[in-house]
Length: 509
Image (cartoon, rainbow, N blue to C red; front, side, top):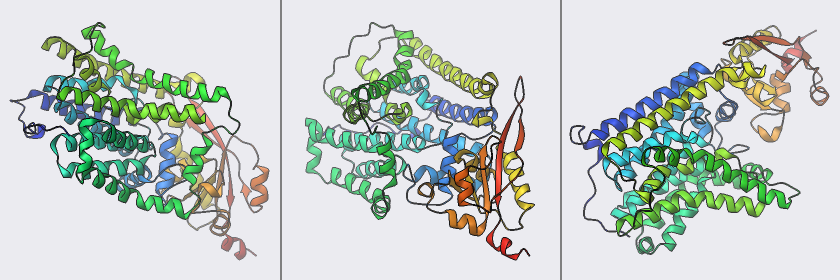
């Protein structure tokens, strides 16, 4: 481990007169959070699909779901319990996760760099869409980011300060990361490998620290692991669906190549932004002493997980989604600075910060334009412009015309059922695609007994399979709703069928 004489002053205890970058950092974070909360709330009429899925799951408070671990779904449900069907709290939750990631990156940067460059390395992240453009869609990537970032920060402090509390913090953050998304396993593997392979870090194994970190991570994940062992491990089965059944050489080459190119595109703006001020001809900075350890640590943490993901895709042919790389790049700006240490004046540093802020503003404008106008340009209503509240209101009206019982289950198309359930005041259970494996908390028997509603897009008749399973279903006329636009109005059409409660059916003469 690295021994150093004394920790640096804590930023939150350093007054802005002594260090103006403290106030600048918090101003940057607050503006980012507000802008990326208000922007999506104004631009989008409905929450995105992933968010609807999280809300459908979180309503059931399970230790795991058909695709992912439970933490993001729980947070989504907590937002609903606190604020009801308002959309902005979900956008705020996503931005608080980003803010926490920025905080971890800043705290780590201040331990490696002077205050000005430390702030610049965080602001450079505005050039990465994984930290802004993709964040309003609340899903598993949201809480994974801060867990990943703070696990990294705590590990570094544990290694350089021999603070046992940081080993505990690293384990807790790593465990919570795995409760958010299994991608955190990649970080855990890299952390353990660094502790085993790096000469300065290897000495940590002579202390209880690494063992405590792993034990705490295991304790945090244990309830979810028990849930996996008690069932059919649906999350593992879902991961297997990403591996083609009939793999070809193309799968083993194209899938990892696509992921690699997507990650380069996502983080490529960071060196471009830096080069716009300092130029491209920046030699690699010499690394000795502490700086060498900083470089080795950051290179392992930043580049190790995507390398493992690429290796897994190369070996299995797994299809990797670009946004799976979201939590991997929080320290990309810091690594770039440690590697090259751009030489310039204070004016250059201020110019870089201004350009970073401008890049964030451009990203926000592009997001608002895309989400507002994409459907009008394409001639179809996108999911984030779907009139979900009106649909839920119409579904409730038609249900009330059939039964006085509360609506318990909404099934059918996963998106439509989820959006109806979210905006419905009672929050019925969601039975997505009428697949029991996707919703073990409900099923055909509950739908027949308590009654419910089936919804599907378009104006087609009730699908034959659903008709066979629910012969008592009564299809109503299609629902047509307007979707107001900026330059032209569109409309959506969907169909529904009501399954009366069994008690109501039996009471009829």
